[in-house]
Amino acid sequence: MVPTVKRIVTFKYVRTSKKNSSDYEIVKEILTEYELIVDSCEQPRERPGEYQEQKKYYSGKKKNHTLKNQLIVLPDGTDIVDVVAGKPGPKSDINLFREQQKGFDPKQRFNGDKGYVGEPSIKTPQKKQKNQELTPEQKQLNKELSSERIFVEHIIRFVKIFRVAQERFRLKPHKYEEIILTICGLVRLRIGALVL
Image (cartoon, rainbow, N blue to C red; front, side):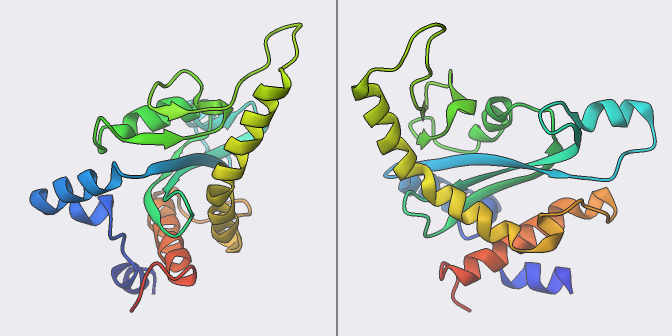
């Protein structure tokens, strides 16, 4: 069932265009016109049996063994541009992004949350300095950035409507990426980005 659905609902941007280098370059050039929104989320998984695997997947933030996914979407949330699925939960958002950024044009602009502070290609909100408060202008700017970023949160919510992407992942770990990519394809179908 999953391979059939996956074949029907593929990504029309970065993932599928990599097979054809000329299409890939065209897609990368078109995407530079947009400021893409990036965000990541974690999902609990079964505790691995081996100690080294447990250490690799244990997220102190979630106090659990987790898998991390990163979604990159268009500015208005009308389509998913790229997905990274099944990375170890403790991996930081910014490092996950830096690995994936190589597939995009160097001029590509992004919009992210505070987890991406320090990356020059990503517009991020102002962080409060120690023992200081943000000015009203900085708070207003952060509010505007949040209203631009909200679309990626909606897409993540659509993905998590599927219980297999929300609750503890109990299937074999090597199937995780395939299942998440299939769900993202179904989400694209739901938001009208994909027409069969």
